[in-house]
Length: 408
Image (tube, rainbow, N blue to C red; front, side, top):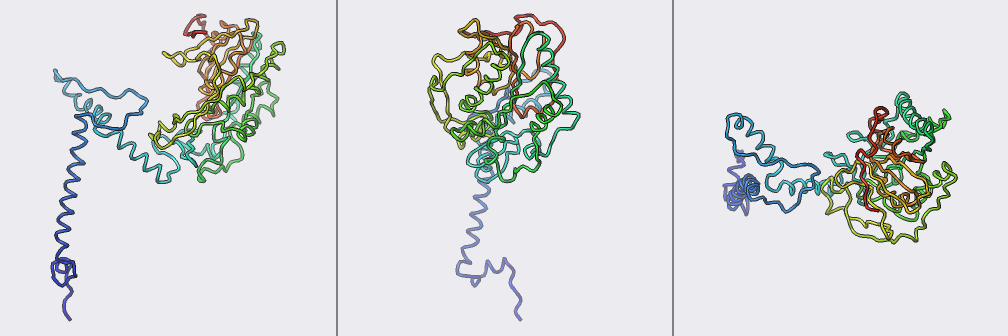
């Protein structure tokens, strides 16, 4: 029996096949191409770093590292490599392109979430911010409140209400629902809910069972009905849109009328607002570097003249005061999060004065200095998965401290 040929002998043998003689040339060319690609992969990013080559702009929401200065002292040399590496990591050639390429691979690869941000990639281009960053248990109702946590939340809200009542101020609590609570059908199949109750369900149930004087406005039923007529949350952003805020607005205004029966506030009809739309990408699309892939119609309701901005451009978290056209209307102090940015143009005109403060903590002295008729406490459902706020209830605050007043 003839011995079997080795692979090498088979390739080199003229009888190894019709294309046997061409295989060594093919392998040689492959090795050369691989070597060239390898060298290019090594040197093009270095060359790109020197010439600042990168067709994709950065979307990082932070200060990028600066180029190190030329070292002059021995101490400077000891830290030079560390400073240079920090700069290189932020600025090497095609960095943003590579990050974007990875994002595109995830987008087309059917990933359920982005591992860097934990943003959930839903169906039909819907993006969701997780209720509890770093853990998806909350989105499946598998991270419930403990009784101790419920005790703290109840004490916090009841303390705020008691403080307001002691000073003749009416208080309303508004908890807008997360996007996943209104559009659960757009979540990936892997994120189906298993637990029966969300933390919002638990908190509302606790306050009802204990006959608490605090009864937050639950907007879920209102918004579930409103979504039959308009898309009320952005697909690529974490917020409700103007239609969502407008749907919530009469419910909130009705609660104000019950708290202040002398006010007689009537909602602005939607006909007072001009509907417009543009094509944009929201904050979640930018966070995962997919603002090119994730586009959506961006609906807006525009009033003329527009309501003043409630954010100080130099410090978004500084309190801002707006004034209305009726000096006899009630005044309001509102502690809020970013959802109120869409609600302000609807609620704001009903009040003679409003102090808008973007915070989760209530500053008692600042509220008293403003002397409002109404305090509104708005925080998103997701806040119930964050550390429980600690109010600033001690120490005087100057009446004008950190107050920014825009043009009327």
